[in-house]
Amino acid sequence: MEKLWRKNYLNIEPYTAGEQPKTDDIIKLNANENPYPPSYEVYKTIAEFEANDMRKYPLSDSAPLRAAIAEHCSNLYGARLTPDNIFVGNGSDDVLAAAFRAFFNSDKPVMFPDITYSFYPVWCELMKIPFVTVPVDDKFMINPEDYAPENGGVVIANPNAPTSIGMGLDSIRRILDLNQDCIVIVDEAYVDFGGESAVKLLSEYENLLVTQTFSKSRSMAGMRIAMAYGSTELISMLNAVKDSYNSYPLDRLAIATGIASVGDEEYLEAITSMIIATREKTAAALRKLGFDVPQSSTNFLFVQHKTLTAKRIFEYTREKGIYIRYWDKPRINNRLRITIGTNIEMSKLIAALEELIAAECK
Ligand SMILES: *Cc1c(COP(=O)(O)O)cnc(C)c1O
Image 1 (cartoon, protein in one colour):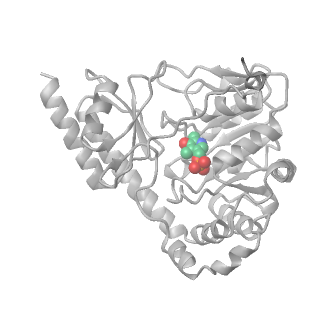
Image 2: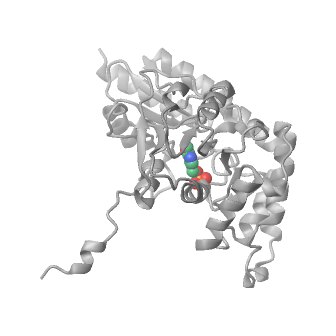
Image 3: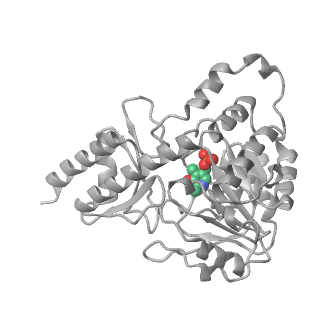
C-alpha cells in the first residue's frame, strides 16, 4: 500500500556542486577554489589553537571576527562600518539562505538573472519564495532597466557567476534606485578579483545587503566563513533568523582563523594579484586557440570554442585529469567554466587543449 507520509516529502531539486575527485593527482579547476594556501597567519593560529577550548560553545555573535571585518572593510572601502553592520555565517550559502528567509517574504516574485549562481532558485524552491528570472543579453550582460517591474526583492551576483562579468557601481546604483521598496542583495563572492564593491553604497541605501566570502579570495572554502554588510536594521533581522535555527554557525576555529586571515591584507593582495595575472595570460592563450573569452573580473573564465563542443572538451580534459565545469543547461550548454589555478596548472590545461585542437580541428 502507498504510504501516505511519502506525500509529505519535500520535493526539491538540490544544488549540484563541482565534483570533488577522490585522488590528489587531479588538476582541479571546477569549483573556483584558490590554488594558493591561506595566509601564514592562519597556519599559526591553527598551530596555537587550544583544543581544550572546544569543550565550550563558541561566541554566538562571533563578535571579535565581526569587529576585525568591520575594521578591515572600513579601511579597504573608505566606508564607516561598525560590527553592527556585519553579519557572519557558515559560508555565503548560509548567509544568503538567512537573507532569503529574512527579506524575501512578499507575494511578489524575487528577481535575478537567468544565468547566475544556481543556488538562488534552489533556495526559492526550498523556502517557497516566488521568483522570476530575467534573461541576460547575448553577451551575458545584465541590464539594470530590466529590474524595474514591481518585485519582492532582487539578488545580483557581481561579478556574476558563471559568466565572470562584472558590472560597474553605476549599474548597481541604477538597480537600487529602481527598487527602493524591497531588499537588493549583491553577492560579491568574487569581488576581490577585480570587481567594484557595493559596500561603498551602504551609506546611501538602507535596503542594500552585500555578501562576501572567505571561500574564494582567502583560500578558506573548507573553513566555511562569509559575511553580509548592511544597515544595523537589516543585520539585526539576519541575527533574528540565525537565532531561530542555529545560534552557533561559526565554530571557535573558524572565528580564530577568520580573524587571522582578515588581519593579513598584504597576503590577500599578493595572491589575488597573482591569480589576476594568470587569468589574463590564460585568457590570451585561449583566445589564440579559437575560444571566445568574455573579460573576467573573477578567478575563472567562461569560454566557448569556435568549433569544438563544450561537452567534447569537458570529456577530453577530464580524461587527462583536468577537471573543469560544464552544465547541460539551456543557453550555456556550449560553454565551460574554468577556474584559474597556478601558472603550471594553466599551462597543462592549455597544452591539453592544443593537443585536442590539433587532433580534431583540421
Ligand atoms: C562560491 C559562491 C558562493 C558561496 O560561497 P561559500 O563557499 O558558501 O561562501 C556564493 N555565491 C557565488 C556567486 C559563488 O560563486
